[in-house]
Image (cartoon, rainbow, N blue to C red; front, top):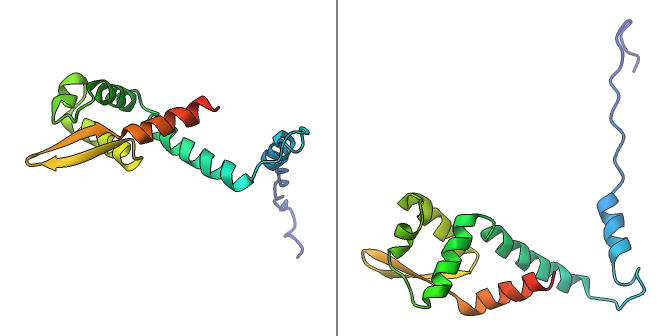
Amino acid sequence: MNPKPGVVPKRRPAKAPNTARAAADAASPRAAGGVSVDRTQIAARDVELARFAKALGHPARAAIVRFLAECGDCVCGDIVSRLPLAQATVSQHLKVLRDAGLIRGSIDPPRVCYCVDPEVLKRAKALMSGL
């Protein structure tokens, strides 16, 4: 198609090379002469690690997990008094931690009692120490 006189046609930007894929291939154990590792295991482990890291990616959530781990028992309402945050904000942080599986909540009307899931926390520590 011919452009109109005096109109400069728009150019499409060149496609960037897939450098992330090339870097991943270069960093693989096979490329380094090491032992071959099943990529599905790496992916599953990394997805799990990313889920924990995202849940702990806010200082308030890290403080909540630390507090619950130190208590050992389930806590029903003492969490808000430990943090300089509103009840609604703490509740949202608790939801993120619960969705990631790091804490459990049991309903004791009218409250919800929270505690750390020790097996999941142990798994998160192992994944993070493996970096």
